[in-house]
Amino acid sequence: MENIGEYQLDIVHGFPEGISKIEPQSIRSIFPNPTLITIPGQSPETVFVSTLLHGNETTSFYVMQLLEQKIRQVTPKRSLALFIGNVFATEKGVRFLPNEPDFNRIWNEGDTPAHHLAKKVTSWAESHSVTYNIDIHNNTGINPLYGCICKLEKPFIDLAGHFSDTMVLFENPNSVQSIVFSKFCTSVTIECGQVGNQDGIRSAFEFVWDILNDVPQSTLRDPINHTTKEPRIFHTIGRVMVKEGIDFSFIPNEAPITFIHDVVRYNFFPLDRGTPIALMKTNESPLYVIDEFNNDITEQFLEVRDHQLCLKRSIVPAMFTDNPSIIRGDCFGYFMEPYHF
Ligand SMILES: [Zn+2]
Image 1: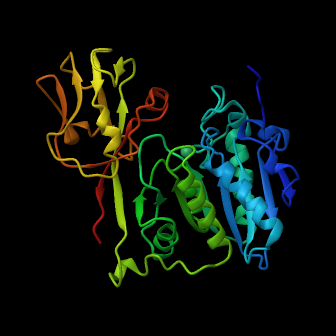
Image 2 (image 1 turned 45 degrees about the vertical axis):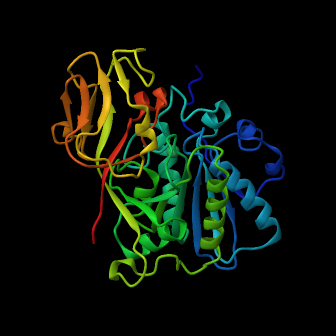
């Protein structure tokens, strides 16, 4: 496989021609390298939009196309800096290439070529009046549109609340783009449903356009003081991983472990203590749960009873997926609980 070495970061001023004519997999015909596009608005205050950190999460690609069309007609109030991340993975239609790190795990300290690229992009943002950061993603399970924030502060809640009243507070992994950017601006990761979800594309575009135009973030006003509708804020309490080498399926009797398929339909709905997660031929849990410090906290959440893996306490699942490569490459999903002010 081609050894990439250091990544080149292209910085271009204005959208290049031809963007509206390409599909995600031909992105390198216009953007051969990771690219930062800068668009001056009426003020230098800048909204940073991060796209395609995961190559197969194409909502952000279509948002970029919609922004290009719109900005050819109207100059937004704020300036735009749009980062196009993993063009190599986008070309291949995958989250990231096998010889590369995940581009949303490279934003803290590190010494790989991908970390050097992220450092350049971060340094650019820190020195260019970036006040808002929006990182656009998809997920694979059935989830509502929601925003992820890492600070329970009013500007963060207001920003995320303008996208959706459902939000997740997360503090790890601390190598993700929106956590690192939260150190110098108001930052959100928006999860726009599954790839191809048209509501997700339209909502994400309208959200970015509103923030570019300083539209008041009034969907949820001052939720901390309970003056109006409260946001639904969830807090991640555990990351659910499949043990290495485990043979599993979602179809009964195909493998020693059968995960209950419905679990992917329960994302963001509370599940009671005792709810089964898997049927098993052995009595050893195929899953383990880790906290944000990588401590094993499985004992608090899961128990094996009569060849069933069951919840030991009530939780709210999120981002549970039935895609085996994501389950093995990243995680099965997250356990959350509602955050109460
Ligand atoms: Zn993603």
